[in-house]
Image (cartoon, rainbow, N blue to C red; front, side, top):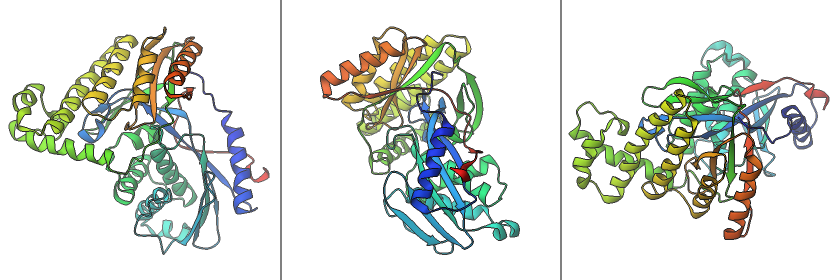
Length: 408
């Protein structure tokens, strides 16, 4: 799906291994892992409402370099800053600090819970870990799930735990929910952990069932345009939307027997009782109920080989996110408006939680240069700076990369 703009992955990982030695010193036994980010085409804010979503992994993500120690000491560092955190495995922090360390610490806690058998306990050792990558943090490309799922896999491999991919994905999910405190749904860790190249993942968040929808990489590209507006996902606005949806469901479920989540609420039930809800809460419910219908319509369009039909639903989704769910910003609206009138573009919308970050664009191959020019010119004229526009390939999911890393 498009051409990846990042340099060859092995080259980037070789540079990351060199950065590891510069930060943490020489030594044998270095292992390198890659974990992709994701972009979601349809199903905005549906995962925690039990609805369907249509994400795909992208060929940019998190690099994790890990080296075993002979003791129980853990050393965590990142190429993004000069900080490092050291502690013993037996003395892991129990309260979050509000720094990026919270994500790996949360994963450590959850993976250690998985390591309950004797053999796992015997093989567990301290590790020196350097995080890096080429995925913008806070841009709506799921850097947090990329880090968490990637680290869960890294720990599983380094400690020989032999846990299933499903167990590792759920460990990553619990880390974000319990330790970091972000009440996210299952979409992000599933989209990262169960990625398949050149496919959209069809994930039903009510029963966690998976399917794959092909998207012809020879015909279509996926673009991501970054506003440069960063958001603090764990700070308030996202969790507020979660609570508002919970409030809407609490008010509507009494009118529909058997409903277990917002995804189940029928439009006729909502319309008959929306006046009973707080007006803001009613707008959130309005978005969710119609977004469920849009996402099924988008899947149906792909299944009948009508990608333009998917694109129409993407634009409608953005309008609802802007007007009813109120998670867009002017920069995102500008990107979507500019993309929507560009030749070769099928659809566009904000991706991720919103409040900044990126817009995703589905376009026909060959339209990339014109799209980038149009987005950069229109955005610069209004905001005085050009957005970063990139075109991505798909990715096959988190994995260990083999190579002569000890010699780099």
